[in-house]
Structure formats: structure tokens, C-alpha cells
Length: 198
Image 1: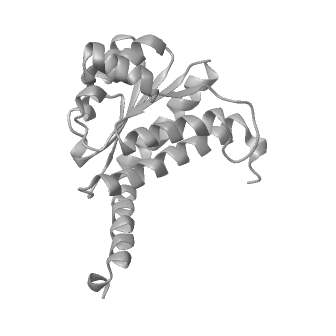
Image 2: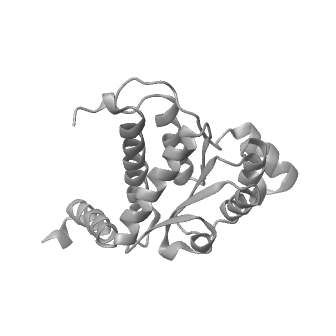
């Protein structure tokens, strides 16, 4: 029945991807560890940094604005930054090459006690891998939101979260944004419990 209805089939594919993600206890553990790391970073006065390419950059920007703006209710702004400034990215790409665009930003803004969230559906984007390397060299904790088996990034990050089953970026990104929202909620519940009735 759903084979003749591409809209229904797409929703079913999305549900199957999420079900596969939830069926692996390592994924839930990774999300909990991500929430703990983000909480500890903010409690310690650190900065949450995020980077990605294309749609993953949009997810990085979405992640950052939920902290500096508001999520469920009003609260003090929390320090988060997505590496998405066009002038900086194009300057770095022009002067040092595209592979360095995020690594240079880690170098400029990152310090021990911060957290880098590296978002890549393939796990193999060279500029993401360079950013992870630079973060680790500076003692910065790293989370990878990944897909397609996790690629090289899986073994490089402190907390890998790999979307299973999905072979296309859109399905992977749909789970990534859920993870980001759930982590924000989990941290906000701990930092600002008055924002939640339950």
C-alpha cells in the first residue's frame, strides 16, 4: 500500500530510521553522555561550539541559537557558537584552504573546558576531521553526530552518535536534529528546572 504513496513511504522510512536508532542502547547512552558533557561545559563556564557543512551547518546554527536565545521558556543566555560566519569561512578558505575553515575557528575560540559538536552525515568531511583534530590537540571534548557507519570521525571523537539504517543525508539529519533538541532539553531541565512543570 505505502509503495504507491511516496509521502507515506517517506514518513515510514523516517520512523524506521528513528526506531533503528532507539533500538541500539549505545545510541541512547551516547545522547545521555552528550547531555552530560554539554551540562558540564556550561556549568564550568565553557563554550559550546558546533560545525557542519550544508544542512549540517544549519543544524549547528540551530543548536547554537537555542542556547543563546530561548528553548522552552525565558532564561539567561547560554554561551554557544556555530562556525557559520560567511566572511570568516571564506577568508579562511581563501587563505588556508577549505579543509581548515572549522579548525581555524576552533583555534580562535576554543579552549580546554569547551565542547565541540561536529556534525557530518558521512563522518568523513575533511574540514570536520581537521576541526576534531585541532580540538583534541587543545584538550577540548568532542561529540560527533554522524551517519553511514560514522566514518573516520567515529574513532576520533570522545562521544560518537551514529544514525543507523539511513543511507541518505536527509534521514540522518532528521535524527541529528532530534538528538540536538533532546540534549538541549535535558540540559535545560538541570540548569533551569523551573522552566518545566514535570
